[in-house]
Length: 456
Image (tube, rainbow, N blue to C red; front, side, top):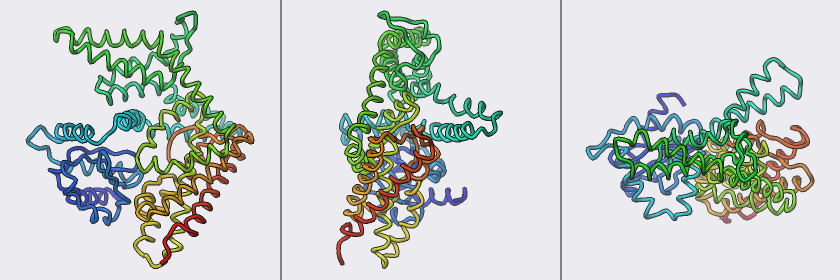
């Protein structure tokens, strides 16, 4: 789409969601335009779904319009530019007020907490993808003995972000939970500072990076808590001096003498548990993980797994869970292909499948979920069966000593191939992953073709 087309799509969306006065907030993730709306009854959902470029809608704590990767990042600023501030404090003020009211009414504490933690990590995904792909390319060049003058530079570029990811996590944590972002980053930086190697507590030495992203998250949360209490107690004339100092000191000491040890133990436990899950229960674990992931995507809760993936990458260099969960997308693709074959006379649905299938092959499942399988009902369930079959395939190979990992978090499907990592080399790892995708495609197709659609 051109810049003009992005503007035209934004302009077409606005009246269908009730106009500027009905929009209270605008944000976006990798695939969805997320809107806060004052009155959802003013949304023309039927026309919205029929609008070219819209792949689906989700009515959740925010009203979410699925536009697909790349497109949403270009449409969101065009959409926001069409909104004029209102007389009651502007878009941001109205949006925050109504968003808090809606969350208080509709969100359970656990669901809200998971989403807030996910909000910390979602902005980091583009950098994780970019650095992960570069790391994979660099690994191929090193193994092949090519471009030896360039590979050290690629290693530095691809590794720099991961070495400092704790700082970014701290910054985003403070921002999400109401603290000063730079103070959150400052406290979290303690986790990765090389000088912590000289610190000992309770007779145990510290290691730079101990606790990883979980330690950074905990440190920034504590820092935000300390900062808020300081601001309520410190005189205004001394606030600019005392509050940052006390925040960094208290949270920093607690991080060094407690949080890094605790978070390090939790991080190690997550890695051990993930390895045990796939190498011991293998096919069963893969079946359950692959089969249950689509419902998490449907609810938007899949992003709560990002901290787990980030911890595994930080601890072990790759996450063995992501490729297994990616099989859910394969089941979805297989189910959509079966619908396409069976419903030969439904031109509208077949057009939707053709437009959404490329994104599905790259692991972006929302267009097929909300445009095809979920509205039809049964194909959503048979897509889950396809994901379970693909997950069982990868889990079975993990039990045989060939686990498949991913060096970064991002879209799955075919897009995951450059990010794969395994103990027996890239070729063997890619072959196992490809086998899982083919199994998911085939099982999703067969289940949907056999009993995923009602007989006419």
